[in-house]
Image (cartoon, rainbow, N blue to C red; front, side):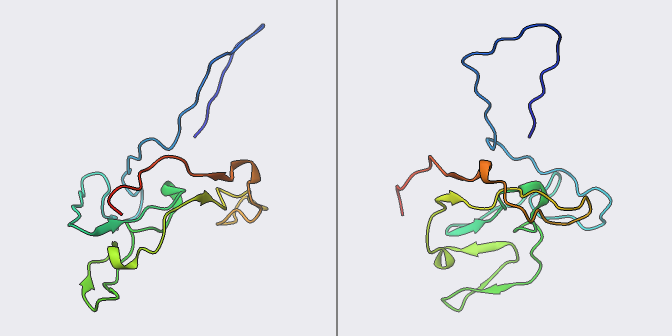
Length: 130
């Protein structure tokens, strides 16, 4: 996400809030012939006690949209690719530890230098029905 302000002369901003990570809209998978689940034109429905996991850097994550192998839950049941069963959940996200790191070289696939300024506690959510 970016915020850009252009202009000449003096500028005063006050009471400004930038909201991010509010909605995620999956885009088509570019040049890839493979389509991830839960992308535009490829909807995905979850059943009770099934969860679909997205990375905290969703546009660049190899997350639940791209998992291909079936899995076995702790209870011995088989689960669809991309699904995390409730019995696999052991906690709640509390902190963004390694957000979009800085790359040493332009072609590096991952940012190896942590963006410390973006590390933060995750606020909100609900502890109901846990």
